[in-house]
Length: 505
Ligand SMILES: *[C@@H]1O[C@H](CO)[C@@H](O)[C@H](O)[C@H]1NC(C)=O
Ligand SMILES: *[C@@H]1O[C@H](CO)[C@@H](O)[C@H](O)[C@H]1NC(C)=O
Ligand SMILES: *[C@@H]1O[C@H](CO)[C@@H](O)[C@H](O)[C@H]1NC(C)=O
Ligand SMILES: *[C@@H]1O[C@H](CO)[C@@H](O)[C@H](O)[C@H]1NC(C)=O
Image (cartoon, rainbow, N blue to C red; front, top):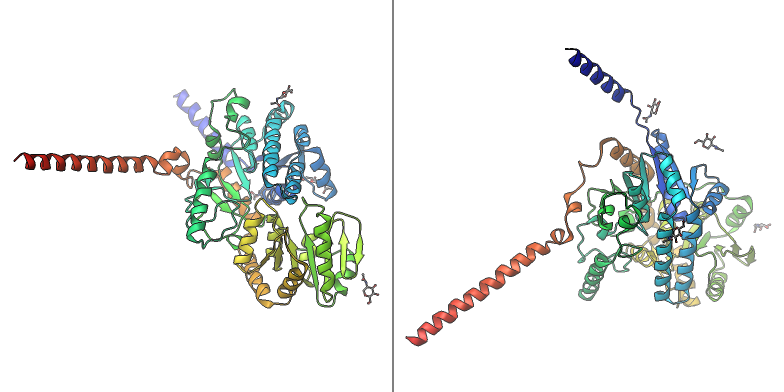
């Protein structure tokens, strides 16, 4: 009787506790150290804070200084290893090598860099201990470009949410059909010729066979020896949910798996007023301005390319050009060159007619947010794919960074800046973008809050737990082929026997 009473008491205490429990979780965000990877996460963290959660960022001290200088107030933990293998340096080196034309060298440099980054980070024992001491509840990790952030979450026993700029079929078991879905980083559209479909299918198979960066080795075996050994694939599939910084308005429509939420445009924000001097230059233009920027990574363009562009800009006298060059301030006729420009605020200015860009994801989303048509000069990585979408949807025109002529550039600038078709296409997309009931970061925070409260069983599809040969029905196909082959053999044997009998008779 006493026992029963005690049980009842403890039960009621327990239910009381759960009733009083405030849903406030501690998150650690582990991202590649580049602004384009940090800013979407910062946007989400502001929304999560509104829901009573707290978010701490694992950062390199260089990134920490940059974020403070840019006025961001976030809580951080410094990881020394992230300074040693600084992601922005790795990308910059790769892009610079790519711009010089050495694509294969660029790729191997990139693989070497991310490999060193991954091993260096997971080997940072001081950092691991510091993270463990904070007793976080969840991690939010980058799912590109390396697996090491997810492995860190696994090591810390933290359930994790993944955030990335694209849906990778090999990660998410996306029901992928290469007949109309261009593979990752491909510049094909959703309408492919027979030849393109063959290439696309081969690329798709190669992507599936691609090992996890950094290498073929099982990372958990090396860095999480205290826990059960799991494959890299299994670690990827542990993710509670994938937040994709992507939108159908900037890709070709395709099915989305139930464990992926599209939240494209996380870092895009409303424009704020320009500094006075810049504002004067913008307001002074007769027919409007053109914003020219190649992103935060490509700080300086090859001087030959830049002078070709400036020559072209000087020929379009009725437009003013604001160009980010990474060099000192210079003013050549209608062209203002600045070391750095407030790109988003310029794109949001009513006088802006056109955006000349490398087509990086965050730039393209800013253009969509403000409804500005584009000329895209893709250099590498995901940029050719973004450029293909922009051209196909008539938001702008793609030009060849390596082989454009001054005359072509002049003509295309005039054609886009003074042709309402491009403007109305991107304005329509922009209106759709802004018409949704939640902003991208509100949507992401909603889903993260949901999975931390109720788990993900209600939408996690079982294909994530299948071995690859079951998912691709290889086992079924082999069975069919075997049955087919055996039946033919059997029939042949019966026929032969019948014939032989016939002859004997
Ligand atoms: C946040 O916490 C406060 C007090 O603990 C509570 O009143 C409020 O409703 C919470 N907000 C949300 C969105 O849960
Ligand atoms: C930064 O954020 C913390 C808590 O989120 C707050 O207490 C502090 O006042 C903020 N500092 C500034 C300078 O805004
Ligand atoms: C890991 O760190 C230790 C020192 O802390 C160092 O001796 C070792 O070489 C590192 N291993 C790798 C793979 O970086
Ligand atoms: C803008 O135009 C006015 C009048 O033409 C001129 O005085 C001023 O210097 C110009 N400002 C800039 C920033 O070009």
